[in-house]
Length: 283
Image (tube, rainbow, N blue to C red):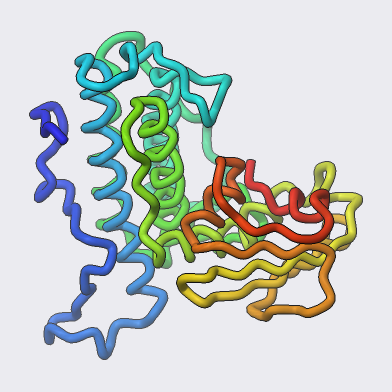
């Protein structure tokens, strides 16, 4: 992809491979807790996915893809144009930055509205500011979160923004008519876990989760991880197990599961009750 000077350089963003090592001062991983390794990898993913999204958006605007500019439709999100997608991410980045920097669990103000002009510059500035906030704020610092199941710490926002960007980067690739690059299996695996443990409980007070009772098993065929989600009239409990008696079962590579759970097209083997499986969709 063409690099554009409007975006910070990859080195400035800190874009490194998802599997890159998060080393301590001695140069080893021995003393780095698993939770901290995951947080650092999520921050790396924000940098990498955010840069890829920004560069591709610039190519769309410049007419270098099959998409007819920023007014092109986003097939995986029919209500949006590319401009809406860029504006959404830019606003969410600023919202997350404000939440992380506030140092409180109080509900924040609403996200800002995107500008009419200079949208891509605005996006790039918001991404850089978000990365600075995620890197400079203590991970255990207090931070509001919209899900009652999430840890109310700054670290939870590194995770949320990593997966937000990964899914919307694929949305943009489809809109631009370029090949969709699957999310790295490790990142996708954590994204599936976030949907099941954090996102679904966020909507537990609404239909259909609030009145449904179902058990759904989920298996990632490439990472080997398994989950069983039990929904009981608004109560959502997720266990790291492969239950045998379930209402529905999903299995696929982690990246495909992530796409399916966020309502994007994906090749996933689904057996059992479609209504039970649909309870696990993110919104």
